[in-house]
Length: 116
Length: 113
Image (cartoon, rainbow over all chains, first blue to last red; front, side, top):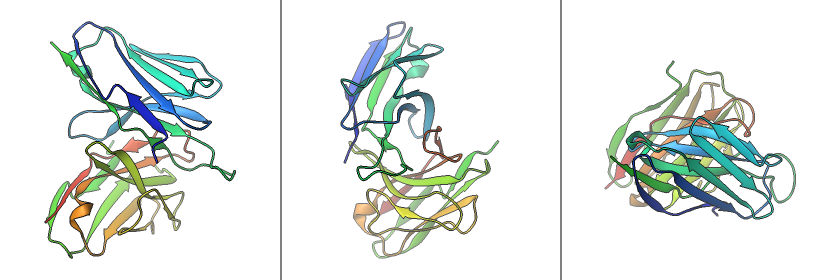
């Protein structure tokens, strides 16, 4: 079952605009990660935000986490054509029966197209 | 740095054939994972390993087997390939806890006819 669900499924913007992608999840989490996937390539880690954090920045990326709403957002500012990719959120959640978690659950992704 | 290397990159099989996908990482990572990616489905976990000699089932393990005889290698086997296993397979590794970033290979594109 999918823990994280990205919204929108696809987003098309012009170069220089900001892009916002959202991720909703169902259960409490330890942390949430965002990944980028360029066409034909593997996923690349972008940023990790822990459950006790509300916002993190990395270059042109800004991630927020609202645990009360079980949602996260990824903002890419001043987008470039090279930002064209699929973006995935992934959650690290405690198992229902307790104990340690060893795996991430990925959403289905948002396809971002940045037009020159 | 090679990171995570998957071989082969592409393969076409006939229904019923068997094959093994190899994942190798040179980062001394403890945890390794096999995912499949299908259109509209995102990444789904097949099997994973938290250390040499250990394996565990993920979300979609049926029809696949894995082995982790050496820390740096994680093998995914298809004993009798089925068209439903046509997919792109990704291997990933992480250092020693799931709260750290996963490093991915560039995938194996597998078609079953």
